[in-house]
Length: 338
Image (cartoon, rainbow, N blue to C red; front, top):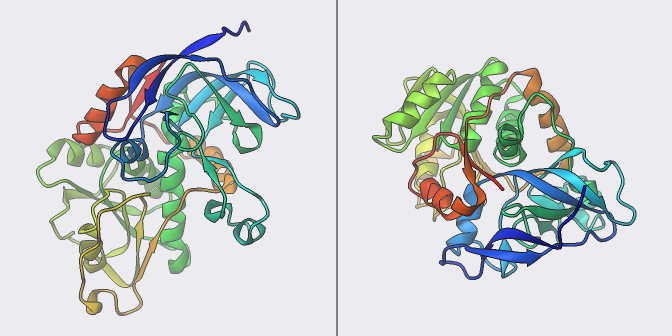
């Protein structure tokens, strides 16, 4: 395919400012990298945290976006695993050092020197982007470009959160609470239901649309985050970046239950009485993802027939998409299409 000399992108110059439409020089893939023509890029809450200045030290100026679906336009030296024209998924984890204590243990999500797409590496709010081929993935053909985009972060983080919620319970999770019913929640709810788990959905108080959306995906109960579920939960996953939900979730889970904080940023957790953590309840966070997570989930999603709810929007409306996410106006995920 013919590659132009320049491309259109939406650029963050400084946190707290709207993204700027810009014409940028076409990036050139380096060793082990591929140049991708972007077909779709999901809008993630992490993007919003970067814009709001809640995640420190992004590369500036920066092209956001780490739920990228593209097609290979060029291969850099040594790039393997893909051919020109092939569809590719680019996730948040852009590279790791491969040598630190955590990488040697198979915990590359905790790498001491990682680089992240749309944070230290320019991402997918653009017509083209480069990525390390070793950290990219083939995508299930059952999904269109826009439908596949949320799988690459919302789906992956949701899947890892579900695994970590289930492991202390021996993988036998019968009732799962999900706090914050957005892009990640609407995917993981389907996976949990397919695994025989009852889903209890907690949305912002008064958000009837989100509660109805959760029920449409099989939740057996949906209510406000200020409500007590009708049954004691085995585990809960918190996707909303609200620290005050941690004590609420601990109160909702049974003895030995698990609460997983699934976001990269959360407001401060308020002080809590020890008795809601006692009785061997587990409180933990999820950090990033591993390539093994991605391979597992991208194989699983079409098997259990996960459906993503997406709102495609033109790339030029990226600021509008971020504002809709900030206001909680989305059911599912916004996806930018160049």
